[in-house]
Structure formats: C-alpha cells, structure tokens
Image (tube, rainbow, N blue to C red; front, side, top):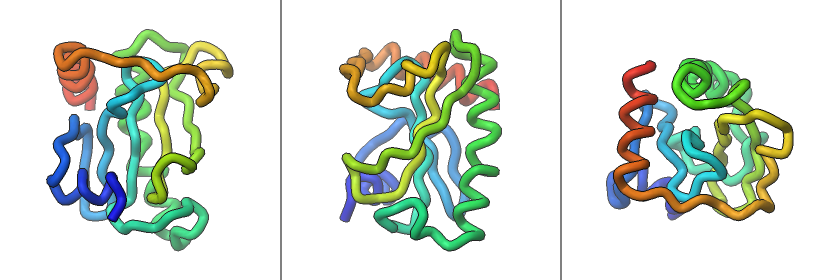
Length: 129
C-alpha cells in the first residue's frame, strides 16, 4: 500500500485541496516551493501512463481549477505541471507555482514549511477554488 493510498484512506493526515470519486489533491509536505500540490488518482496504479485513457484525461480536468487557484494565490508566472513518479509507486502529478523552468528541477532541495505556513497556503488555495 503506497503512502498516497494511506492519505486517501485517511490513515495519514493531509492538507486536502480537492477531492472527488476518482482523485484527491493535497499539499506536498516537502514542497519545491510554497503552493506545491500533488494530484493523485484514488486507484493505486504505479505509472501514470498505465491509467486508462478516460481516467488520464479526467486527471487533467480535475487539476485545472487547482492550477488556476495556484496562479491566483501564489507569487508565480504560471502553474507548472510535472510527472516524475520515482519516489512513490502510485501515479501522481505535481502542480507547482513557477517563475522559470528551473523551478521544476526536482533535484533541488525541498522546502520545509511550518504547520502555520502549510495551513496558510491551504486556506489560500481552498478559498480560491
């Protein structure tokens, strides 16, 4: 069982941004930048391109209002999207506030935000949805 499946089931708490029958979105607890959100299908499948075509398409549609909320509330030029999938064997996409292509460099050190900072970002994104 992946860490994402544990978040989906409620075993591990998260800063949930959005959820429906097929997907959940929550703040990354080790973000690249403030406002980094993970979008995860509830069905545990390792690789994103192993999702069936319908679910894969629905994933982008599910992410769209979150990306808009990120662009509205975070200091960024746009919301970048990335699929890496090496750390957790459960398909997911990263929605990251970016100002340059280098902001999507996953080899850079991750940030450690306080509970108060995480809660503030959570509140901003929820209010913008």
